[in-house]
Image (cartoon, rainbow, N blue to C red; front, side, top):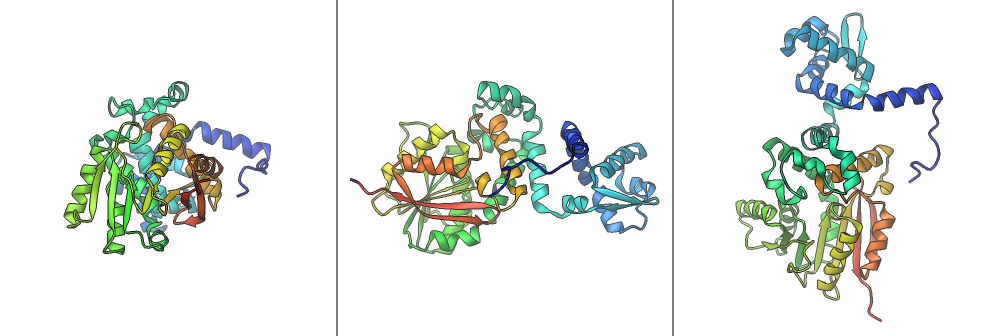
Length: 359
């Protein structure tokens, strides 16, 4: 991609305005959220320029005239709205804020999971710890605590995680099963959605989910609800514990949006452990969103922003990687890339890896 390879073409006046937008970005974020939460954008959209005055909006949205006024004024400045006489209309940005699932999924994730904790970004950067996580509890990383997060926080976390992975499922399943694996080891399976998709796609495959105890309980509960405990199994494992057992001999090892949860040193350890437990014809398939492989600049923006979630909230030492960094680690782990496919789903890349031939 060609992002960020030359200075932006923008005059000084507009650049200064963009700087002010950044300075007031938390205000703009919360205004957009409130315009959605109180149904103001929805009402204006449905009114279609009729009865969309401040007075009508106030009576419909159960807010004071003062509250509606400050939201509408900032909505105009943000380009969410425009005004014709006394009537308010959605501008294009407001339309997508209201109707685009990605925008709302990202907004809910940032508000519910990250917003308060991002106040600790500075200390997280200095100390290399996810200091923002203390907003929810006294945990070293977010992963063992996912099942213990507040209900709305947990919902927004999983909605965000699944939104991006689920869009890739239809394209991925034929690629994953082209060599007809009999056993798949799903490393970091979370709620088991991928395991369920695999067992639906191929009625003979056995899927073993390797994960922490809290996530495994959720995944196996979901498998039980679908009467699939005979083909979806759990393997309790702490991948950062060198003494933790590792599932060996799988035909295909699967890591989806997983390695970005670890530092480069930790990724290398995980990849080496995986390679050590693969048989000679095993495959390792890695699905990630690399910021340099995004088809559009908006995708790269979202991916790079997500890195700061890892910094402040998740673990303090991982991020969304440049693909070259991951390719280097894969090679160092004794693996080679057999297939490299971009633009799957919403900007995912699939790397199909195999063991390097022994000398």
